[in-house]
Image (cartoon, rainbow, N blue to C red; front, top):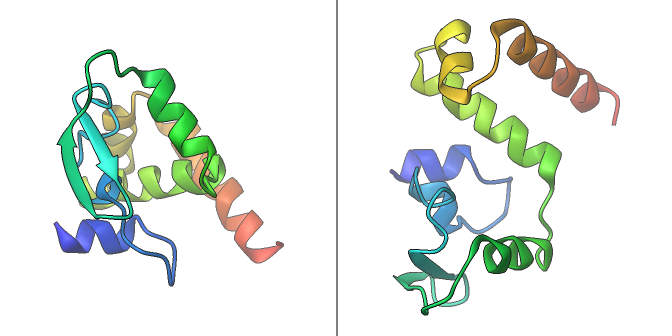
Length: 110
């Protein structure tokens, strides 16, 4: 679990709960994350995806970096098999290959 957190977290950044628990982003209404305390708790009644999204937008959230990290995690989980990783992500193999190439070019030409 810690390895997952390290892989999904930017260099010199604290590991967030979302990086440790695979299904956490899919279940924001069930859990509330306290980044300051580093804990998970039951979310208050009426919590929604909107509150979770708002919380992300109030941090230094980077959608491109998030997408890249998710793709790399899927590839690692698939043992390097791009086709299997693409299936896990719900996209085609060519789409995943294109996205990976795009992110590599961005890393080389910031």
